[in-house]
Figure 1 (cartoon, helix red, strand yellow):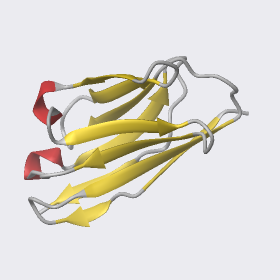
Figure 2: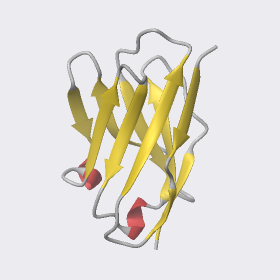
Figure 3: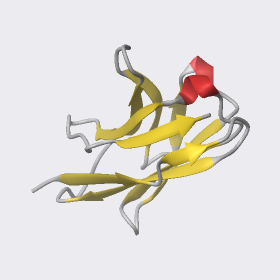
Length: 111
């Protein structure tokens, strides 16, 4: 069955960096992968997406220039490198496939 497992979350001071990983299994091809986040009391929002076949990426305005999404097809893993973190980046981060499969989320707290 399809499984997405996020890791790499934690607590970091403002201005710091974290790298999230999303290990994907159970599907041979995913046209699009994305990271979303949900802060307390707020709706889930898209953060970044990537089309692994072309390398095309998109970013939400609040994270442009600070976050980088990438994929390693050999490892079946999608990454989210987060730099210059702000307290407003505090949220549960989820990865998802374009076909609608979701991971369980990983908490990122910026103090």
